[in-house]
Amino acid sequence: MTYSVSQNIMDALPKTRVCRRTGGFVRGSYRFRTSISAILATVLVAGNAAHAQNLDDFHDVIVEEKAAVREADVAFEVSPRQFDQWVFGGGQSAAQGRRHLDSLLALHVESIDRVCSLTDPQRAKLELAGRGDIKRFFDEVEDVRQEFMEVRRDQQKFNPIWQKISPLQLKLNSGMFQHDSLVYKVLQRTLESEQFARYEDHSLERLRFHHRANVAMVVAMLENGIPLRDEQRQSFIKLMLDETDPPRAYGQYGYYVVLYQASELPEEEVKPIFDEGQWRALRACFRRAKAMEPTLKKIKLIP
Amino acid sequence: MNQRIRLAVATAVLFVFPTVGFTQQAEREKKEPRAEIKEEDKEAKPQIHFPPGYEQAAAADERPAAAKAAAAEAVEDDGVEQNDVDVFAEKVEPNVANLENQFLPRMRPLLKAELSFVKRVCRPDRRQRQVIAGASERCLKVAVRKYAMGQVQLMGGRRGRPSALPVPNRLIQEELLKVIRGNLDPRQAERYEQEVAKRVASRQHAAVLGMVAKLDNALVLSHKQREQLCESLSKHWQEPWNQSWQMVMLNNQYLPQIPDKNIVPLLNERQRDVWRRARKQGHIYRGWFGNMGAGVLDDFDVELEVASEEAAAAGKNVDKEAIPADN
Image (cartoon, rainbow over all chains, first blue to last red; front, side, top):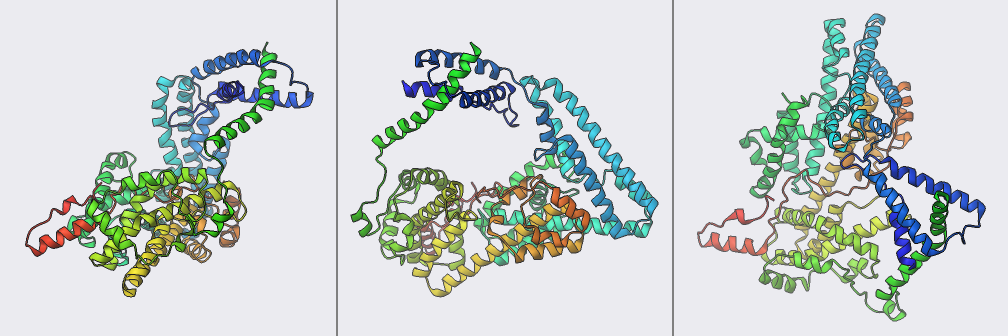
């Protein structure tokens, strides 16, 4: 008896029903969990609750509670706060996200200044353009948020909204002030040609560093399944650094860009590095990388 | 009514739950009495305890019966003393056994890849290959046991808790190296040791580059700062940084936890301010199993090798595609 009642309690206790693929909490369960905490606090203070119910009554009560929880679970709902966490990540609110972007803009302008020795008017124009980029981003966020608010209680219509949140994440994480930004356009128009050449060199050097990191990490990861001799490793890394281009932006897709580009290299250049068994295993990876082509094109990481 | 319900739930939580724990514990102990090390056991030779899952591991050994028999014969003198695998001396806790069941199939491809690599680097003869093949299953089980125990210690908050989980393929390499040292020519063992050391160094370098790239995204570093940070992180390398690899690779929002003393002196005022406010995440223990969908090198097959050699001697072709590397 003790066991079965307890099982019922276990079943009735907070169920954090998580939305598939997104991890959003459902409000009904959260409310129930909060109420449990409040009750516990009350009982601890009062200290006389032990004889409130006999176990038979208690069983009926638990059945009722379970039904209530099930009813709440049926109502699909994703919290508005969850939207910000998806877009800005790391549990950040929109306000925190904005502060982060303001800091990033300041760091970015400072970095350009270090390389190009900006004049005050140039600096002011860049800061203005950067604020424009941030505003443009938040306008997009608000548009998607509106759509999110309309479907956040509708599981059927909810999945497509994820397709719109994902590009916002990508934009935020791959560098807000890259080639399609207002900052870049102002740089082209405002800097002297010699300043701009220095900026381009600096940007390219930075992208190359990220590319070098991506290549090294991809090779290390591949070696979990296909260990290489040092000589092979060095040759493969050199080939990829020499024959592939840095991606147009930073971020998680950089690894897929590396693999995709490696898969596009002429076989006669890559195959001689590996022996027959290694090459067969590597081809499986290249096939998967080629399948990423439409996605990488869609997000403009490859031409 | 509502108040009554809440009161009842609270009562149950306070007074019934504790008994459930004991009831379930008692029921469990009826079925599986708690493992206690008897005095005579302590004196005896360490017993190898095979937890659930090792039977499955044996079933997963798909070598032909003849190869298994040959390997079993060869492994009788594989140069590895039982004391080397003293992780088997203690009776295993149920949570360790459960983890072993999870990790055994995930670490088996790492073993296959490593054996194939040993073949390439050490070029063992037929007898040596049989010894290595025969000992490999035990190497895997020891590596899995160590990994599972490391995980339990790490999550359990025990005294002497390790700072990081061991890297799975390094555990396998260590165990294989014992077999290689005991059975192969010292020059063969040295070649393998050197290659393993270079692979470890290469992965560490890649992890440093990856972390600095993450920091560059967040702090917009100069060229000089990037180089200085690479140097600083390499010099003050911490083993837990090996754990967060997949997060560094695949999660844009992940910023690794790095001691301030290794980074702050290299930053300017504004960068320091951003670093101070940035939300850093602790080490994420994801293990080291994935390889981005690549196939697993798996051609350490003694029987197939022998068939290939014999066929070559007879002037016939052997279907090398039969070697299952492209999975």
